[in-house]
Image (spheres, rainbow, N blue to C red):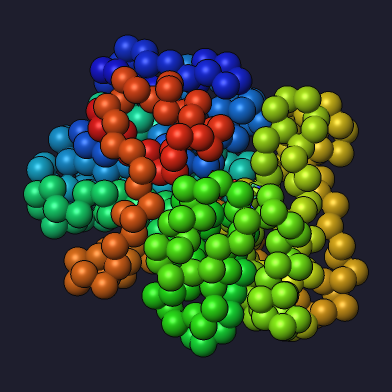
Amino acid sequence: MNAVVYDKPFEVAIRQVEKPQIQHPDDIIVRVTTTCICGSDLHMYEGRTGAEPGTIFGHENLGVVDQVGSGVTLLKKGDRVVMPFNVACGRCMNCEEGKSAFCTYVNPGFAGGAYGYAAMGPFSGGQAEYLRVPFADFNALVLPPGTDHEEDFVLLADIFPTGWQGVDLSGFRPGESIAIFGAGPVGLMSAYSAVLRGASDVYVVDRVAERLNKVKEIGCIPIDFSNADAVDQILELRGGKEVDRGVDAVGYQATKGDGKTEQPNAVLEALIRVVRPTGGIGVPGVYVPSDPGATDPAAAKGYIAFPFGKLFEKGLTLGAGQCNVKLYNRYLRDLIISGRAKPSFVVSHNLPLSEAPDAYEKFDKRIDGYTKVLLHP
Ligand code: NAD
Ligand code: ZN
């Protein structure tokens, strides 16, 4: 079958690989119909994770069940399913408590598992014709049959729940104001979630024009940080009053293997300034535990300097981590079915798998309107 594989930093290729097989009675094999490129893929694409050449990318996957292992009870051939990006056992302590991003069983020595993601276990990705799904009764969410809402439902694999959890991690309550840094797919989903959850004012910071336009489309306030300091702009709009909550949907950006990280601490520092005393900050943006490409020794260890003393003075809470997709995807699916949520406003491109190399390059450079790319094997 065809698959998108990692080659070397800044290069992916389409390769012929072996079709996955059932390896355990709890597995299913899914024929992938839609799979996305994610900002998280860029950590591997840019060479920050030590991914092995040949790794099949893709952790945001939707498709149709093609084969069912003998131990699977809830799924049958032909079901349309979307898989949380987390691979989780469903039975360990963290899974039982809903923290499926931190499954202690599937990937010993690392907190949590995912498809097609270096360090997050031996699970091949779904940017391919077929995908093996372990512990399938737990790791597949059944969707209505047919092809309706395909662009919305595929976002249940990751960014819609991730944006929602980012708002949760900030301690947000209806009526509050919130500043979101990053208008990439995750930041846009955080902003959209805050709107759905009754935020008063939602500010979204970025510098990419097409992304700031999407911020306006959903009724939020775009802040272009290439014009002037983002925090100054937000405080000026609010007569000096800080916001209640903040979200970092940027994470560790663009080290490009030369140790020159693009101010990895800038967003955390800005959030500590812009959030009111006793407010909260949610960090869905990924900070890698180490950066094999960095020449700066602190960056290589994944160290980030930010003003913790100011965070302490303001009594801010800080919540971070990979998204526990299972906690949210069923309810967000039903919001889509009822017509109350349409997250696919974020989708910019629908492409065949063969165009992945070009799409990765443009998404990585954030050019030509590449915001959320869906691939159709
Ligand atoms: P992305 O990386 O394209 O989005 C980041 C956006 O931040 C870009 O639009 C960029 O222009 C903007 N940006 C860069 N520097 C900035 C700054 N100083 N201030 C404000 N904006 C700035 O793509 P994405 O898919 O939205 O991913 C965002 C982050 O979320 C990544 O780190 C990704 O790994 C992470 N992520 C986390 C989870 C999770 O479970 N926690 C899931 C998915 C993605
Ligand atoms: Zn993702």
